[in-house]
Amino acid sequence: MYASLKEYIERLEREGELVRVATRVDPVLEMAEIADRMAKSPDGGKAVLFEQTGTEFPVLMNLFGSDRRMAMALGVDRLGDIADSIGELLREMTAPKGTLGEKLGALPLLGRASRWFPKRVRGRGACQQEVWLEGEADLNRLPVLQCWPCDGGRFVTLPMVHTVDPDTGIPNVGMYRMQLFDGRTTGMHWHMHKTGARHYEAYRRAGRRMPVSVCLGGDPVYTYAATAPLPDGIDEYLLAGFLRRHPVRLVRCLTNGLWVPDDCDFVIEGYVDPVEAKVMEGPFGDHTGFYSLEDRYPLFHVTAITHRREAVWPATVVGIPPQEDLYIARATETIFLAPMRMAVQPDLTDLYMPAAGVAHNIAVAGFAPRYPGHVRQAVSALWGAGQMTFNKYLVMIPAGADPRDPHTVAGLWRNTDLSRALIRGEGVLDVLDHAAAVTGYGGKLAFDLTGSTPDVPLCSVPERVLAAGGIEAWSLDWLAEWGVAVGFADPDREVSVAEFMTHNALRPKVFVLFDRAAAGLSGEELLWLAAGNTDAGRDVSFRDGVLTVDARTKLPGRDGFPTRFPNVVVSDDATICKVDMRWSEYGLGDPMPSPSLRYRRLLHSDRAEV
Image 1 (cartoon, one colour):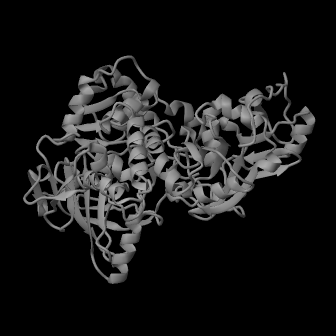
Image 2: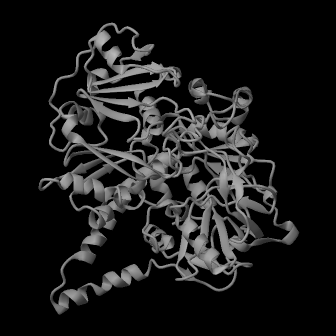
Image 3: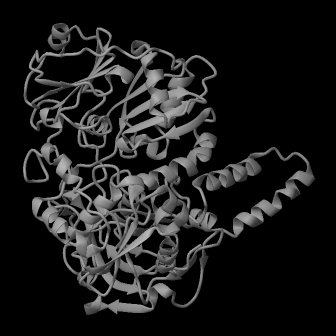
């Protein structure tokens, strides 16, 4: 366990996982551009500590941005160690205990588990060494970032938001971005599916003001626990206590009575009044790689800000993958596989969410079917399980096949009859899914590859392909290995895929149509675009043996399309130029080109919205 974020920083520095930037860097756009370049460097680059921020506090970014740093943050050599511990614990808890001796033998297990429960302590914690009340409690004194040029303002990006269910008293810690409106108010971005939103509705029904406290920093385990897909009602600090093998010590907030970790770096205390009208929040360059657009959310009022001496402000940037959140998602895959098998589907053998799927759009699951219809049953169970509810495309592969090996999955794909493998559905999607016509609801698609073996020869690749049917360009990306043909056309152009196929004598398994501007992107990048820009029910069809996917930009106003469609998230020219010019000042080694230069071609306007 780490006694503070500073202690974790010292560990990162000893291990060669941290670089310090001693020159002053602006939290508005400049820090995020540097962190984006670092995150997209090989293996996630290094954590970056910005020492001069224009405030009294340094800023730490990319603290979770590699598999190694993620393991270090959770206090292990490898994430598999945590998965092994959880698996062993679950086996002990669920093993039959018939005799009195066996039941008594389980008592030490209960005693061990009791040591992980959070403990409330009297007095003030380190997080309350410095106190700002009334006129001093000014959010503008903090180094809050603006990450992207079309963001609605500056956002707190790694907040641990504490609320309590007013009916049961059960606490919750979630991570919801917070847009600064002024020194005393922010937005509170509670999606309709989140626990914070449920608590808000309960306070609204009761006609009561809702206490809210927001923590930042402390042991990095706390930040991870706030993102973890725990069942509603399970205390996130119980998970944190298990991970750090030591209970979380909680102290009482000064102005609202909530309890927070005593060793955090910052605590922002306040309330949300459900009687108040919601306020317009956003846009925000989100983890999907697109802007989430303006919408109305509750208003958070600050009543106090406390912090520890020598506090460090943690922040992250999200956007086009890969980003730091990729490694948080990988940790979740590893840690929560055993509980998911126990609670949802015991025949699930592995689960992988590739970076291109931005955590929820794409998942590949190893599975061992035992009877007819078992795969369909498992798909339904997974689509109803926690954050897997938001999954849009799910690929089921045989148990023992490696879902992380693209060549293995490609071989299984080539040997699959898609007419029999398709499993269609509809259901809940992430509110941030911009392709759905109805917010938070749309089509889902699964592929049953469990009966396949990866021993089919590669598809033949034609030497030359001609434009036809309104499809003006084409790419050979993936064709040989995946049986996928990729074409390009303007978003508003009527096209004939059949004419294009006939003209070129093509017979791929899958044909995907993209905007012309996407020509030249890699297969991984095209996969990210295809998953993000499609509704699995509206934009995917199977006809004459070919799965056709229209992954072009959806123009608002057309029947069945979303009413608004966002632009991709990229830096502006001024910020890119500024960072290029100052690179040698930062002391970050060889120049790194801006990743945004590659994606600016995908923009449809200079705004967050197409």
